[in-house]
Amino acid sequence: MDCDRSRALVSVYVDGELGEELAASLRQHLMGCAACRAQVAEAKAVSAWFVPGAELAVPRGFAQRVTQRAFAGALAGSNPVRSSVAARDGARNEVQEAALGATRSAELPWAQAARDARRPPAAGHAERGEHAARDGRPEHSDGIARFAMSFVALAAAVLVGLTLLLARDGGAEVGPLRAVPSLEGVLQRLEELNRSEGVAPVSDSSAQPEAGAADPSIENPEPRSPR
Amino acid sequence: MEDQGLVAATLAGDSKAFAALVGRYEGRLFGLVRHYTSNPSDVEDIVQETFLKAFARLDSFQQNSAFYTWLYRIAVNTILDQKKRKSRSPIQPMAEPEEILSPSSEAVERMTVRPDARLQRDEIAEITHRVLGELPDIFRTALVLREFEGLAYQEIADVLEISIGTVESRLFRARARFKQKLLQLHPEFALEGGS
Image (cartoon, rainbow over all chains, first blue to last red; front, side, top):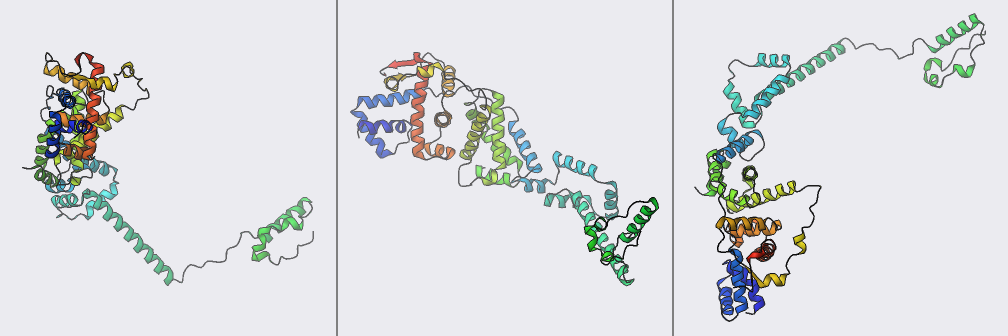
C-alpha cells in the first residue's frame, strides 16, 4: 500500500469502518511510514473535539403531549391510524364537535323538523354514532341527504301526476303565436291618425319592416286604403 | 416491545404504543436537534414536529428497516426545512473577513488541532458547537450523525439516503473543513507539525 492509498483510508480506519483485510494492509504500511502515522494521529485529534455537552433535558410530559396531539389530529384529518382510532374510541374530538355544531346551526329549521319527524323513536343514538364512526361522516349528514332525496322524489311524483292530468284533458289549447295588435291594425290606426292630423301617409318602404316578412299575416298585405 | 411491534400497535390505534416510541427516542432527538439550534424552545418544536410527521407517515414505514434511522431522516429533513424557512431573508450576509484570511490547505495539513488539556469538557463542546455552526449543512449533519450520534456508515447512508462511498468521502471532507474552520476561529489550539 502506498501513502496516497493510505491517506484515503485513514478516516475510515479511525472510524473502525475499514474491512479487516484492508485494515491489516494499512497497519502494515503505518509501521514503516511516519507521515501516515501522523495522519492517523491527526484524525484522532480532530475526533477528540466531539465530546457531548451538557444534556438538554426533555420537558416533563413531552411524550404524552405529542401523543395527544398526534391522535387528536388523527381523529380530525386523514391519517393512517384515523379509522382505527375512531372505531376503537367511538368518540368525537373537539374538531368534530365544532364541525357538528357549525353544521347544525347552518341547518334550516324546517329541515331539522322534517328529519325529526321521520326519525323513528327507537333509533338509538349509539347506533347512529357507531355508523358515523365507521364511515367517518357526521351522522346528521345522512339525515340531510335522506331528506333531500325524499324531497326530490316527491317533486318528481307531483310532476308526473300533473302530466297525466293534462294528457287526460286533451292538453292545453295553444293558438298560433301572433303579435297583438296586428301590424295591419297598427298601420291602419297610424294612417287614421295621420289623416285626422293632416299628415302625409307613411311611405311603403318604411311601412314594411324586414322582420314583418316572416309574419304570415302580412305575406299578402291588403291594399292600403287611399288617403 | 420492539420498535416494529410498537409501530404496528400504533397503526392499530394504540396511543400508549406511540407514547412508548416517543419516550424511547425523544432524548436522542433532542440531542440531535440541539446541534442545529441553541434555543430550547426551537429544539422542542422541531422534535415535536418530527414525531407528528412520523405519526402521519407511519404507514409508509418499511417494517424491515430500522425505525430510528427512519425517524432520524425525518428529523434531519425537518431541521433543514426549518433552517431554509428561517434563512429566507432578503438581506444576504456579507462574506466574513476571516473567510478571506483562511489558512491554506497546506498549512492546515501541517497543523494539528487538539483540545487543550486545561479546557473543561463543556468548553470543548461549546467550541465544537460553534465551529459546526459554521459548516455547510451536509458536512455538519455527517459529523453530527457520526461523532455525536455514533451511527455506523451504513446507518448514515440510510438516514441521508446516500451511498456508503459518499458517506466516506463526505466525512473525510467534513473533518477537513472542521479543522480548517477551527484553526480560523481558534488558532491558539494549533500545534505546528503535529505531535
